[in-house]
Picture 1 (spheres, rainbow, N blue to C red):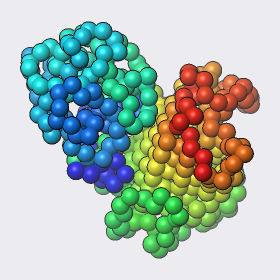
Picture 2: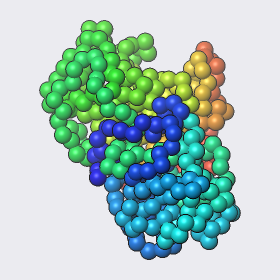
Picture 3: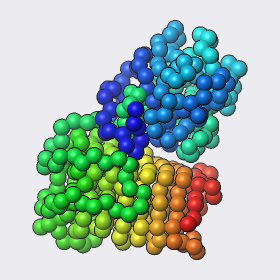
Picture 4: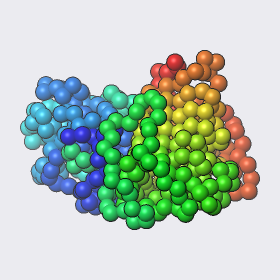
Length: 423
């Protein structure tokens, strides 16, 4: 099984697609990985231990033995059995109290080992049949190794999960035949480079936007704008090189210069191993109208962004992971004066930012935006000029948002000093 960075884009189980509308009927059998909606990390038995009483954690999705869970229908719900050990996920001491540990323990048929999968938008709440409380990541942490417990059920994303068939990609995007320009023969790529930039496998001039429905694998070809897409300016009315329909995936692509307005996502989408050599107006703009939509940038990098790299105009949750950026204005900006004033959430993990740069994230606290950070590396910034999280007061369209602060606050900008590393 290969998950996370080197996963294939497919997710075969209907109804487990995050951000693709309401969840279908919950599965009652099969083997799955459980992916937390707040962190994009997987439910795990640490060290693939076979011992009773080991508290579960969340870890990077890597196909490890402790991340496969067999769902079995029982009276009152289902059991979640660790495939490697044959032991069940249960609440310690069969407690009904909030904050009690969820652990691996010998399967006994107890109600504290029975769970109900309840649809929550396009996710599931995993509710313990004994106490009626939800499977949750402690303190809503987005860090690998954070403990799993039960807590009162509400709409917090750390209490929502997707179920991906074991061996598939936990990032929820279906694989279907692409439309628009045909993609070249895929070039196998295993994990994206952690430093340096990939060498292009050929080039293609793009005079009109390539519309993608399903998956387009560029085989690491370089695409660049020409004609109306080739001005190289900062005009916000420029068209994109690629436009991704709801549920689409763009992977193994290099955007050269000029890059026009990069990539537009019209809803849930995944950008995997996509590289911007010279960002035009924005590297990518994320649109859509559904609060349950989920956008993921996994791997790749961007440089020479005079203004923003990623512009988040629609609602939903945006994940940026395993990404590198240098010579930039902002890595991410939640729109502060769009026509619709949505709540927006962003989760950054395993991101490397190299100076010069101004800020990693800008969010609007008056609309309830949140930004979560884990394993962030800042390079060549000894004076710490790059701001981690800027806070704004969003404004109506036609007005300008006002910067009102910066730094961690436990409510909107969620990180600690241990999440940020300077080199």
